[in-house]
Length: 151
Image (cartoon, rainbow, N blue to C red; front, side, top):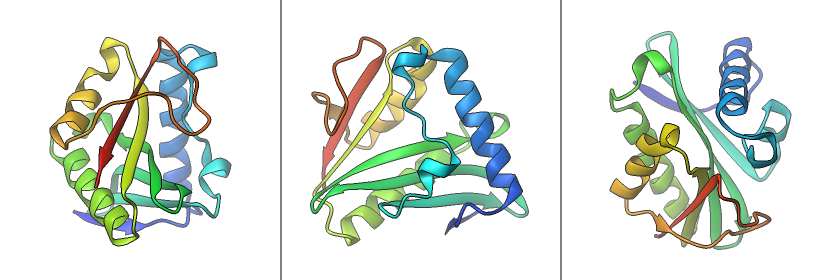
């Protein structure tokens, strides 16, 4: 598998991200949806990575700089057909290492609080993320779980 910075210009990643946003809308109330669309991910404070296995796009994730020492993990997704195959762990390890190289001292994220998101919450906990208060522009939300990790 290969992890590479993606400029978000290809049709395959556009389809992959549309499916991500559509899935998040189907399992999360609109007022609690925080998944970024393609245009939002093109922000200069975001680095986006795609994971490929041969020619197949199998995962993605992003790092959004919040301030000099704090960043947010965004848009983690694994192809549903490839879930529980190690892709998310490989990518999360890569993003954590890259955040550290960039001087990030705290990495945070928002994920869902429902059973659908339990595998994601377990993955983040396995990597040392712990529950925290809402950060950045987030507000308390019963549909959200906020996690953070000191690097």
